[in-house]
Image (cartoon, rainbow, N blue to C red; front, side):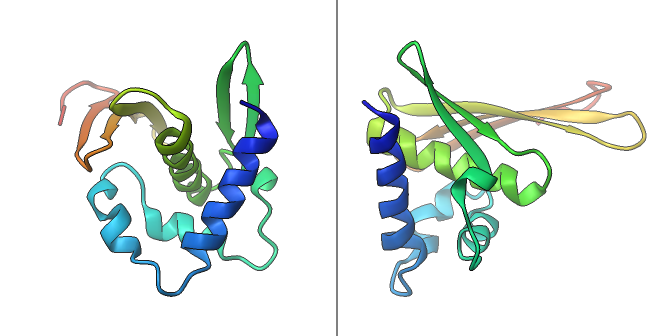
Amino acid sequence: MTLDKMLSYLHMVIASEVHNDEFDIAGAYGPFADAFDYDVAFDTLLEDDFQLADHCKLTLQSGSVVLEGASVENADDHLTRWVAWVLFREFGSGDALSFSTETEWGDGTGSRCFYEVYRDGTVRTKVFYSDLAEVC
């Protein structure tokens, strides 16, 4: 596996899914709406001056893929999740992609969300709030 092969695959998916008006985005990604906002991710990917490197960084470290998102915009978070799913469905092993996100609010509170996105379209989500009063 090479970084060039992964980037080439991502660009092929962008061309065949994102830039294809006939692509059924809701049919393909609808079940995963709890895990990532595919509309926001696709809107970002459709920007005229879009460059993947401006939104996320892919590296290979000791045989593992490391995907880092740019945490400057919420759209980048959704885009990073979409990229992770696309890479997982093509190159990953196992039945589920697991990842987490962390949100801090201005009042000093926050939440951490844990996701398991399964190949069959199901999603498991757990959210822990900073005061741990609410868990869903």
